[in-house]
Figure 1: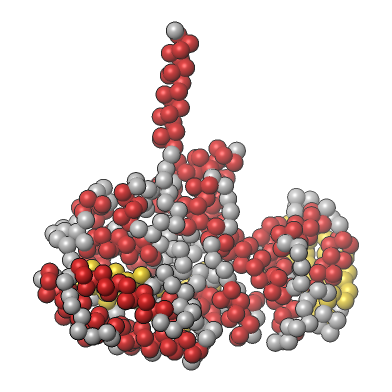
Figure 2: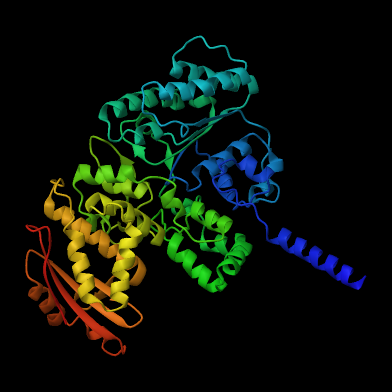
Length: 536
């Protein structure tokens, strides 16, 4: 009997423990209604709703990378204006002074189509309009979508007596999908301009217009026609409207961090450091908070293991197209300094690839210089660096059936074992495979390939290192050895090793007790590979 009671007590404790440690993270879920009804973990961002509705502003735009919480916030706004207070119980906005009477809401999701054919936008908008017309008992007198949209806005106001909330998710998806196709881009720009012109002409019937997307596109009526639209994309006060701050991570994900630590047999402190290294580092305004990638965070908590979740959820093919199109020097791109306003928009007539890399989440603000109003951009974290550069590597080097991960592993193993000859022969062979069809600028492509490899090595065994006399091309730190590597283009390995010695790059490491290995390398653009090297 006692054994039976002890067994029952143990099972009850196990059940209680399982219930306490089970959390629905709602990975990929973008509906606030579904999140709340399924009791999924929701990081409370509703304080921003109060800021928006009490400011008196009528038109808003928010730009953020994909899978960063834009759609979820817009869905939250939708439920708020629908007056569904029961969904907000316990959240910040529940205590707000608000009448909670429902407003007519027109919610348009443009993210559901790829927009590769003429008429795709028409089909998406037509489907939503039919539902709105049925809901507000509107009988269209025209087949023109812009005219119908105007009728719906006015009709919804007359039906309810309240001004309309218009929410458009990924308002620029048809344009982003056609950056490489001038004809389709212009077609969809004209279509969207006609549709969005109603925001101004029907202003007296509108309570709020809130648009989300990647970029502010020039010559589109939503921005050129509305001189009072508030772009909160770079606003310090809204810097954490999407994403997860470190305080939110440690507060909302306590159990998830604990479960992750137990599953990987590591301390919670180690887990926190790893989460920061992999997923933190995004910054969306000059003085804004640093943000963790929300999709990666909920994914790692759900799976209880680390992975490159965000980078694997979407191809970087658009970025590669732009790299080739604009003949970009990667080193300059990944360490660029610019005015923050240059990141705000895109236009095919005046292309700015740096803005595109920032807006899509592959570059972020690393620091701000208030004296000159300049920001320095860089890769946000290990996930993006590792995933993006591994995706780029096969575009510059023929690695055939070998994975980028396997290649990097072999290089790192050589360095950890002090096999410098193997490392250098492997490096020489690696760059001998640069495709000859790369004719944009051979030297630039070789330089890009070299940079990609060096940065990938850096993800695993090193960090970029600056000395008082200059920057070491590659500083590799293993458990036993320090490698100081200098690379020259079309010069000699002797010049490379002489620079290491002349600038005394090894001095900061002289007292570490580690063996210091210096490698001078020369790369010949004529031979398209490493021509010689010296090891000291």
